[in-house]
Image 1 (cartoon, one colour):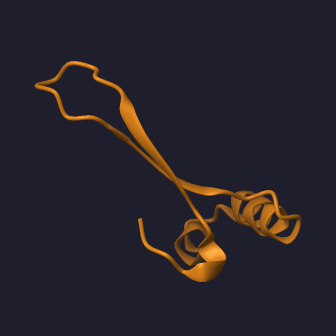
Image 2 (cartoon, helix red, strand yellow; image 1 turned 60 degrees about the vertical axis):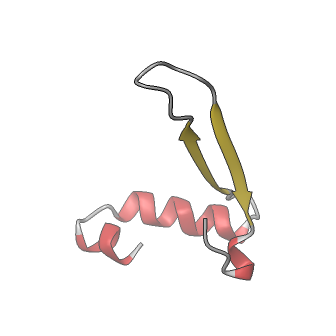
Length: 55
């Protein structure tokens, strides 16, 4: 968020802060499965950022 603020994205930073306060923010990682350039599904993981876990 610091970098976003430095770029002047103040509305986005405020929206993220508001979502965090309201418990409406989710942290996820979505990755496509490897398969020689063809779509073969994806992996989706949700994290609890309050526990400072890494993807």
